[in-house]
Length: 385
Ligand SMILES: [Zn+2]
Ligand SMILES: [Zn+2]
Image (cartoon, rainbow, N blue to C red; front, side):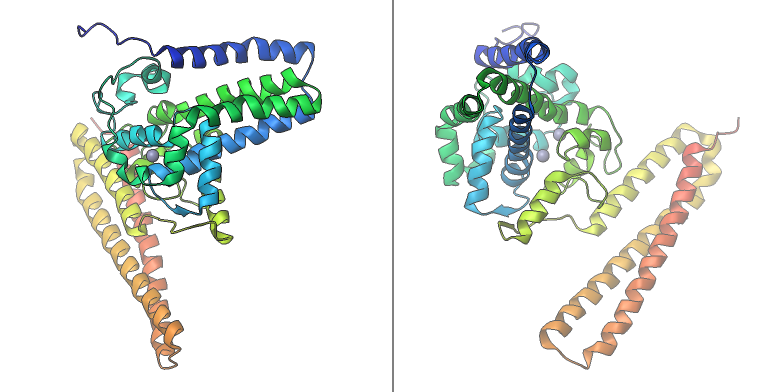
């Protein structure tokens, strides 16, 4: 194969993706106009969309690909079942690709859906042609091959996919008396919606948005995208701290997959939720801001007088952050000792530590504010000629 020659099509993928997409934009709306969809059909569509969507984001992505938490077998079985229904390959194939994506992000030769190869390639092109013929590697997923649920799903993928996409919508449609309407909406249309919402994470989430945690790769944070992707829009954070079960870390970040995982942990169905240390998160953010400020200084020598103020503010913020973090750590450790040993004598010491931690916290907030003021000034002031 010469360099300009494209690899051959994978016809199964072309036909499945092509036919379902064509039906979703022609037959489905035509049926909707002529016959109409009722509340039952929309409910089956909504429920199956949620089930297959969460099975991918919570199961395939955060549980299996990143081991961000541990799940009871019943949750693994449900995610494996509906995940097969999302028609995005088995857990083993999906996770192998995804771990390669994180390991070699943006590398056009190794990242399976490298955004550096353009929107079309990262969105769907990589699935349509055999770009990696003979280069599929399962080395990254030795741990998953030991999971009986993953093994079973891999072996019976086709049967499970047919059950979710054909048997369930057709059976419910038959029972409801609207066989084709239910199948078109909850089968075909739902597959297409779910496909493209997931594909956006590989394409748009690497093109559109901000990069607060790292500029070393193309991943982006995009709150708007999070709304349509079950919370996966905070992709720059995710690429920086991939083992964190959250993608949106603030309470107000729209990340329903995170809320679902947390809710399941309250009833004991998942545990071992992993989170990135606060210190590392704040440091990554500070470092990225500093990097941008330095680039701007480099490009605008007229802003040079601000350099010293910037360095000082950065150092002060960093010192305050570390002091806050260690005082918090000390306080929490001591609190734990006091709680387990119930030692009265520790209470005074504990109160002193708590006060110190609170002081350090407000000092960090103050230093961060000052750093942000200097940073904003540097980034937005017009360099004088
Ligand atoms: Zn990515
Ligand atoms: Zn990931």
